[in-house]
Image (tube, rainbow, N blue to C red):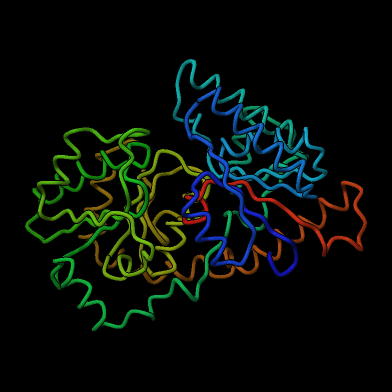
Length: 384
């Protein structure tokens, strides 16, 4: 987008933001935003975003993540920004209960009311938003076939990792040649199904004499969404579970694995599943929006119910024991996403939407190539 517009990224993660801005050659501005419900801090963030937008006068503001969306869309509305676009990549309210759920509903409805366009990153997410009645169908649009950023099939390509390289990586991780390795990539939190995954893997290891490994690639979030104490204990004490922490480049971990295990409770459109499939991995995923738009059951992976430890364990066992099924799933993995979720195609479709929204706002066609836009986003969204 920086080749066509003047781009400024606004985020709460100062260090990551400056690195990303330097990498892509874009402007950037740091404003603190929390991921929790913090009314006083949120008002302060709103005022800072409002002042920034009034000073810079962008023609388009495009927000990602719930908190940045609420603050950014409201600030853009009051600052008079003509084009206000919000991407929905997940709804935390789907797992919330009681008063918290009601507060999150109000926040979502408010965000959409200030936006000109709302962009769910999956078709099932679009349906969920419609069922809640958060905004009219005419205001929503899924760009392309879904996803927020698509997949770079050249970058995520198993051909970058020849057999000798895979052996070296396995040796460094303590994985043997005959091990069957499941991998999870993402935040190690309750909502990603890590409690169920660790418990299912532990039972599977005890049930079968075959060698298994579980690779956990990601950071814990002890304050926002902590794991059960028994889960943390199992991760620490089970020698077959390898926890690597956050990794900038996750491809080596896909390359040495046999299957992705991704039992998340909720998603928008998970990049991890796209990445794993591109690396020729069959995927075990929960039957939720986004996941079930990438994975077809018994075609390129297996679908399981949410929060079902038993079903997850059976799927992992089936993946290991049924070699003919595994071979079929693996052969279909990369082919199943080629053409549907190619990154450069999605980028061109997003750019077309920017231009379309600008013209709908009353902007002149001659100015579309001179548009400036501010992207408000958590740095984690850029990094994911």
